[in-house]
Image 1 (tube, rainbow, N blue to C red):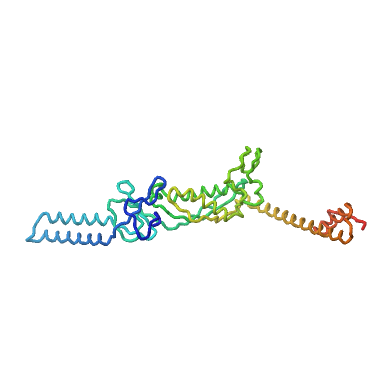
Image 2 (cartoon, rainbow, N blue to C red):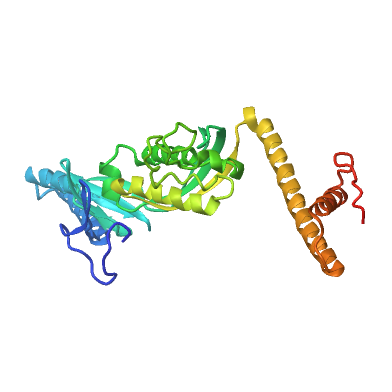
Length: 338
């Protein structure tokens, strides 16, 4: 049974605790089959009808027969009130005059105490879509973020009795956890330095306290929203499980489904990303050019059998940079005298 771990071959008797946590202790029990009760109700209806028939036909004329017939009908209605049908992955939380008595998870046609107040709920997996929400990331940029949460009711009694509406509770906590996640991380890798935890005493824009105390361990600003999807999904899942456990909700999976800059800054951020890509490309080209020049000068000195003079080496490097990078107008060609 999903609400309590138990052996598949042995059922727990009524009143035996199965889960102990929080304010509500969930109990599971097995109801009796409804078919014998249904047969009894049919027999009572036939008996009541027969008694009414006998009361109006001589030679049996007794004023007690109608009373007994009415009692048979009333008892039938009372017994029928205890019938309940549960589908697989459904549960019924039972209360007796306001006191919790147990949770029924036995699928099929069953009969319970007619005085029980029953509340049925599904134990199946549910999909909760949260967002898109507009949140400020760790650097302060407004972003839109959304997530898909897959969850189920693990403890029916706690989900019913701990909160007024567990569906609204899941929605509110999912939104809160998603906002918290987005506010702890920068959107783009180029902004990691601005969001890194600081240990200095200044008042920078990082996530440190600014008092010389290291930032808390949960300030994982080195993970970006754009590139850390798997890690962020794991963090979001753990946060949701921590929030849902007290009310008997089990979060199975959490994934980021939507991520983008807010429309008002999307254009500016795209231009910033393009500029960062150009700078990174030029840096790679320059580093490659310097590596080629070093190899070329080393090969030239090996062939000449001696090292070049500093002025000659500097002029050679300047000329080769112009040739490799293509910036001939910025750096004039210098005669090396070779």
